[in-house]
Structures are given as structure tokens and as C-alpha cells.
Image (cartoon, rainbow, N blue to C red; front, top):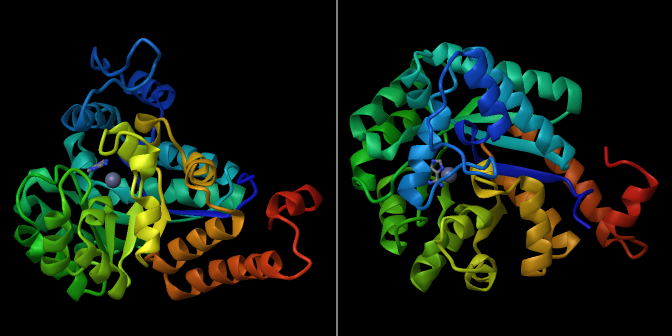
Length: 349
Ligand code: ADE
Ligand code: ZN
């Protein structure tokens, strides 16, 4: 039912987007021995908990050695997304991970941009980059990333963000880095309310100039905070498959996706680190339909929210929004057929 729906994604880490097959290829061509425990017996990334996940993520990232490697990961990821109906994908990149293997900031972006261009030419998918810092590396490193981003502006870099271990440091510690990029006109997002509770989200919203929150699901434990998120039109980059894989929630019934939506929060669907969590943007939409009972029109609204909340330039956003609006109109007109019926007659353009 959801295959033909246009989709948009705001939250995927490019270093966490290479499937085991591609990581093996990169390791082989770079002459690197893979870490013995990187994969399990079923050729999936092996990890048990959040800190084990971060270790596995770093080990997979260590196989990325050149700008071409970044190009290939980006192209491969966007090709998969396009095949699943994605029209827009905003990808987090980590210059700190690139630097660990000797890739400088400009080369890192050159590779990513080449992947974006190749996928755009072949599939028509639009993609932009959010440069991220890593919370557990600390505020000084975050400031370095922010400075590098401003020193070498790139047309595809549209915003700034932060992932990493939410239990380390406080949001206010990162205010200098976020202020620097925000004052230069870049919109920002920050991971919060994933591995820590509502206080983490409240503090992030108080201390940092952000219009989006990565995850934010644990804000659901505080109704006043939910009111604030709704009132301030903060967009939540919800990643249900990631939350379930990491054990933030035991099962779909416990996941607050619907409660966030009912509280008036602007929710989107995202895959986070797809091969680590056994998910994809297409699967997130399909699961939202089958597990959360979202209909096609609901999902189209989610795509619209993602595009409206994206950090793309206004012309790009308006172009994509116009396309969604046309489909929403068709969908809600009195003679409307379902999108899955429509897709049998003509491809979604
Ligand atoms: N980096 C990559 N994936 C992440 C996640 N789910 N949470 C925090 N940092 C991350
Ligand atoms: Zn994330």
C-alpha cells in the first residue's frame, strides 16, 4: 500500500547507512582488515546495546578512507531510497568520523556531493547534507566542526546537528558551536529524548537554537513539554525502527508515535542507521501503516511535514511541496482513488 507513496527523510547518518556488503567492499579495496566482531553469523552488524552500537558504527566508519568511498555510500543509499519512493533525503554527515581516517572536510563533502549528483541524475531524488558534531567528543570538537562548516561553505550543506551519546555533557555546553552556525544563518537540529528522558529535550530546547529534535520521543513523558514542542512547531525526527532495535521501547504498542502526533507535534518518519536497525525509509512508512494504522493521506501529510521542516532552500522546498500538494488534492478529491490504485495506472512523477 505504501510503495507508491512519495516519502521524505530528515534523519539518516551517512556513516551508518552502508550495508555490510558495501562495508566489506570498502574494506577490501582499502586493504583494511575488518574488526573481528563487526558482523554476526547472519552477516548483520553485531551489537547489543547503545554503547555497543556506537562502537560498531565507529568500526564500520573506519572502512571509509576516501572521498570516493563517501560517494559510493551516498549513491548507494539514495538509490535505495529512490527505489522505495523517496523524493527528498536529508543526510547527516560527520566530519569527525571522516577525519579519523584522514579525510579532510572538503574531500568529505566532495565525495558526498558526487553521490548526491549521481543519484539525482539517475533517479531524480533530491538530497542535502546536515553537518553534525559528536556529543561524546565534547564541546571543543563540536566548535571545530562548526568552524570548518563556516570556513568552507558548500551549496548542499543546509544545516548543523549533533548525534552521539546523549548522557554525556549538557546541551548548554554546545551552545557556542550551535550559536556560531545559527548566527551565520544555518538552521539546527539536535539528538535529544532518545537515550535520555524529557529533561534532555527540555534543556536542548532551552539552550540551543534548534527548530528540530532528532528522536524526541521521550518528550512524550511530559505533557507540558509536548505542549511546548507543539506551540513552537518543533519538528520531531522520529525513528521508530531505531527506537525498537535499541530497546528504547519494548514493542510498537509502547512507542509514542501516535501520542506525539495527537499532542499536535509535527512528526516525521526516519530510518536513522538503516542496516544497523534492519530498517529503511520504505519500511518505516510501511510499518507506520501496518502498526500505527496510518492511512495513505496521513503518510502523505508526514511527507509534507518532512519537506516543510527540511533545511533545503525555499525554491527546492516549494518545488517538492507543490508536487505533494497536487497528490494530496487528488487524494482528497471526491472521485479520488487510493494512491496504490493510481500507481497501477501511471507512475508517480
Ligand atoms: N549516531 C548515529 N546514530 C545515532 C543515534 N541513534 N543516536 C545518537 N547518535 C547516533
Ligand atoms: Zn540519529
